[in-house]
Amino acid sequence: MTSHDPDTAAGSPTRGERLAAWLEQLGLADQLAAAGLPSFTRDRDGGVRWTDPGTGRPLTGEQLEELDTLLHADGDEPTHAVPVALVQLRLQSRVRSALLASDWLDYAGVAARRGVSENAARFAVHKAAERGALLVVPHDGGVLVPAFQLDDAGEVREELRPVLAALLSDAARNRVDPWQVWGWLVRPAALLGGAVPAEAVLDPEEAPLVQHAALRLAERAR
Image 1: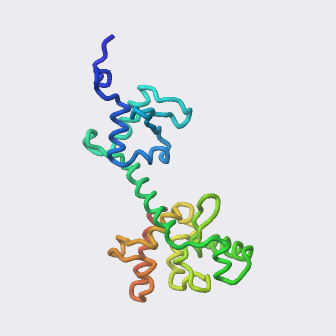
Image 2 (image 1 turned 120 degrees about the vertical axis):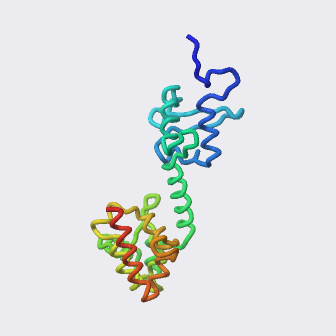
Image 3 (image 1 turned 30 degrees about the vertical axis):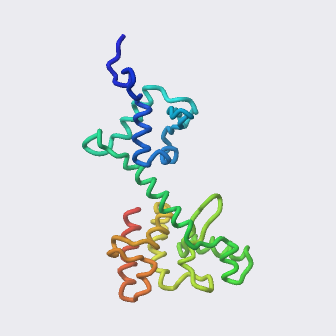
């Protein structure tokens, strides 16, 4: 039986090769695994090998067709579509890298700033996080305490307390990503006209606006 699929035409790139080249051009190839999707590797000659994340086996032609359809599903013109979910993952990855390069403390760092033992600091951090009074971000099996929220004595900045309370309330805590909260607090926020919440809250006239924006963010998460 003769197939009219362009993938079978002599000299034409296969579906897997075209899909890989498209994702590389968009800079999204590294986001496939993070999204739980099949990923690919290239051999020394540039050949593409797609792998099923569940079985570790090469993808079948049918699986590649399904993946192709899925990644081109966004937008009204599939030919020019961009996989929005992968774009979002790439942006999140870049934001996380920037946050990790900023100032943060571990338990030992909090202990040093407060002048207490590490065990005491660990207990205090956990209690404050449970109350929604301190932003604690899980990372690599441990936790990070973003330093911007603490004063020189290691206590939560007074002006930030109502903002953190809104973002980390019982209703929002299980739905808001701590990384998202961290990023929102230290980067320009659209709801504040491009102001940085953690800085804008220092102005008594701007503080109510920051609190309102924090509530809006928490409400969207709910």
